[in-house]
Image (cartoon, rainbow, N blue to C red; front, side, top):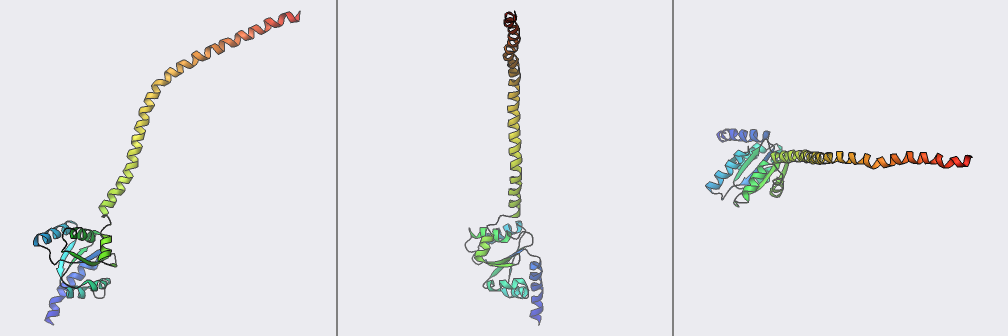
Length: 201
């Protein structure tokens, strides 16, 4: 009875941690050096991820009767759990990236937004950009057309200034070319009556 009472606070702690979690990822940390473990914890902490080592039995108790019970098959051997309540892809992204340089770290599986994934599934989720990256790309795509539009308008304004300088010269040339046409018309009108006069006699 005393053992069960001792376990309860730990089980309650795990249950509370995963209650509002966006994602939970389980890893086998055996083989990590102290330096690697320290670095991993630092990276996870900076990403707002809770990382802790628990006994599998404690996690089994905490997960029982919840959606996280689907993670029971992965609770074999030493296990550590990474939990995020804000960014659903963060634990997978940080852990999988770290595992590339620390081969001893093994991603077992996890649950992301209520769906259980094996190690391969978590690796695929790790490829999804962070929310900050997505927002940055979105902002960039919005700003790009505005920047291009402004550049085009500047170019048109510069060309407009140059063509505007040429317009007065063209305006001056037009009356000079039209003048002979206007003078020729009266001359022809006067000549016509002079030729018709003898025919009347």
